[in-house]
Length: 549
Image (tube, rainbow, N blue to C red; front, side):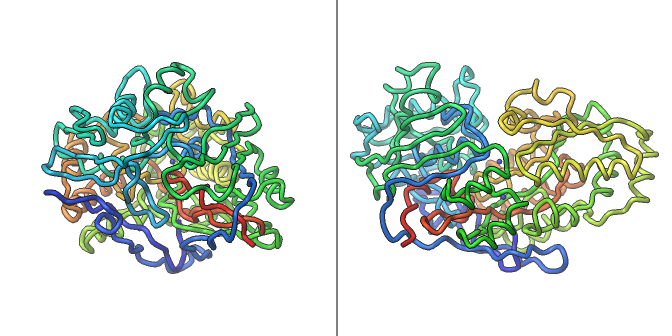
């Protein structure tokens, strides 16, 4: 679970080849961007491919995060705070690169000898943080934790088509699928594919992820965790790859947006992702460092969490969407660093699709221009005048708070009573995991980021029983399309099916799309090397951060 500029930067989509193909960065993803934005709704920022490489080592650097991770157990790593930290400690079989391509990770290669088999050949001599050596048994155990109902893993859906995961050699793991699955091998670059030491995880038991070591393989190991304050990572000098340029990385939990910004301006912290949009101009003009923007594969949406109330009527969802001032939100809520969209998926996610599929995907989108007369008429037709809709808001940043306010203003213009419920930043994550946290809510602002460069990553959320299908939408025809797209390895054919899914999701307004939004990262003058793209969620980005001079 942020992209757009007149000149868009790299992003592509997975290209999975049958037969004995080997997954690699070059073979998997076409590094091309979607069509440029034009007109008044275009973003005013330029996307950067990367930040300058580090010129030397550091004793430590300090990073700001907007919330404390509730746990660092990789099975629960589905949100920004967890993954921003965890990506530097725990590694996956495959890896997302800064260019948003797929590359080998702990597996040297992945082969696909037949449509329902994936074979992962592991790197030799990889050490866990406790000094033990990674084996196929650790991989089988680690992936198995994602499928154990007792763990309630956030990534369990990734494994829905997995039949068996077995060790077929000291350094080889074979995954047998119940049916072809184009998404599974892509997700092995996310937290779904993390490998941890079996002995360490079993020894920690229910405390795994909250105390002690994470027993992973990354360039950093978990140091001290001062609850409510910070997490410190220490460089792992026995790392199999290039060692980290900093001996220590410190993550400070700064829930107040102003406090995060001030900490960056004063040098209390050296940088951070998810910069408060209200601080863009202050940071850019401060002279304290540089604010970069990169591809985010992210859309800002209104997640419909309940259809038991007024939003159960499509006409009310249409009315609220037609009354929403998207341009005003982009200007204020995103400080102009985004673009209005009627699409739930980013254009960059479709960059590798054939032109006909891409055109089909964007041919039947949600109207983005306000039409209050039509919206009022729809509310009246639905008999929803005066009905109450409750929307979550939070002080995480003005992108959340101002979108909630915009929904309230839209409702007031068309006869709906939109009420806001404030959620603390540390509790906002619970909206994704705890049904009780969503009780009484009809929708909440959500910036959805693709975890793989494929539109299906978002569109699968409306399948019956999907993890983020909070409103309980169910349509047999939609489910069948998801199944067909999932089983289709050919990227062109898959894109055609995904275009049909996008059309249905748009026509039914299963979420309300608002804007595309780039990733933002601030670095002061002392440090450099952090990637600008959203790849930081699934690759050890902090290892590249070092001295700027």
